Image 1 (cartoon, rainbow, N blue to C red):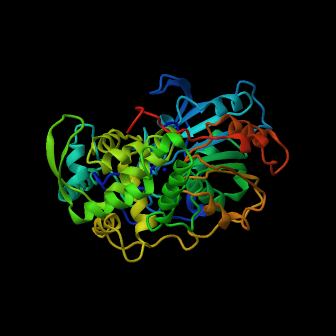
Image 2: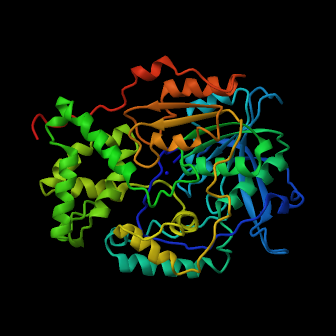
Length: 475
């Protein structure tokens, strides 16, 4: 699910897997705030300068006298300081993205908001420079990890064994991340904060609101993942997104030349199921290789292309080529996708929150992930984890009408629990919309306004996000 790169993903490639039982702790058990070092000037990986804080916190708050980990936080001070303007805490997606890597350089909206608000980027534990948990390395054979499930499983087991040496794998949870946020808030002396969460970051923001309701002034949630949604079980969002894309294609002359995307997908899935063994070209090397094609793998590859209008615009052409026997464009996009996710944390959270209450796996992907998660004992989520936080906190919700992971309908479950809300939808956009100028202006109005809700911006009706790829004069 993303940030900075602004993309987050429903199913990452099964190249690496860290597995963990769920651990949680009541807010009252946090105890006294840890000793705080003063933030110091630092240069981030992006090249930008900020104030940085390294805050030591217990790795596992349920274990007295256990080891600590260092949380890495970047602070962009407001150009005009004001105690009346709460800081904005930016929560990355994935799950497993680093805030200091994914949100930088700062999006234009937050450069404008920085005039009066501090901007706070916390590398969630398990990402960035907060005890990173990563299995897949740049040198790993990505092609083989996509198409060889046995190799992927072996790769995962070895990674778990390697990381157990210096990591308490039961301590990397959404609740732990929420408690980390609170530790940073206390360390920085912030009375109230504004949270901006993207995709999985919205789940973290909502959990933080549930655990620390008095600390939140406002919240902006983009690509909303409510706590009651199991996104591993949910398959309809992808279907709705692809069908919506196909419907737009049928109305567009440039797109119609490549045929119907929905029909192409159905034919490809049927062909791959009937004849899974294929010899295809590795688009990186030009070498022909034998692979086993799976329908769920096709969906996973396409899912990553339905996040942003630029990628969405070429989906019809890619599917036309695939249906014609040329898989190279589709495979090239799949192999070239890099969302900057720390896949160790991704799977820790996935197994703890979604696979544990998945029920009976249905798809091949669900079965593979579930079998990996069974390597560890059964776990139990906090009793209230799936409950909606009930709050009068002003909330701005942002959705893309063609979002393949967190569709606008997810927001319906929050209407009663978060009554002071405004929901903005861009109809033919994907997973991320906060980069669009119309939405940027609305976000700034929301943050700076004393009113709990916004009027629907007039510019929403004028936005057209999808312009299909024209390509050659004839297919």
